Image (cartoon, rainbow, N blue to C red; front, top):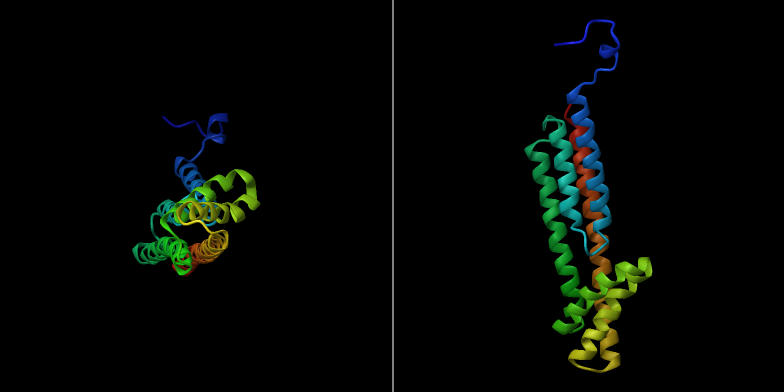
Length: 180
């Protein structure tokens, strides 16, 4: 039963399709923003959240502009981001001969560092790697080198992940704009 033309009910009727589209677009934006934060915060799965947001945005448009091809490229960039994340943390530490305890310490330090803002994010992995290396092998100078190497690896990985996340978003918009 529809509202009679000219009635108050007809004037305030809403379109369920438009409402759903707006909700999906809002969810997509929230996921992408959280994913961008996740590229530098060690707790959030950044690339996965960015991909999820872009997938929701493509779905909201019924995959008419960004389809399988575009999403495949975006997914490949997301997978590359996860590989870079793992490789950056491990290779930075391994390059300076870090022990497994130093790697665990860096991860714990990164998580604890979240509670101390930007300084915690910068110094948390360093302190954690240093403490882990001190427990494993001792020697303050060696532990300092391991902490520095681990921190530099994590920093370079975070920069690379951010660049890849931005490439994912740029790819989405390229497909969206050029597939009308």
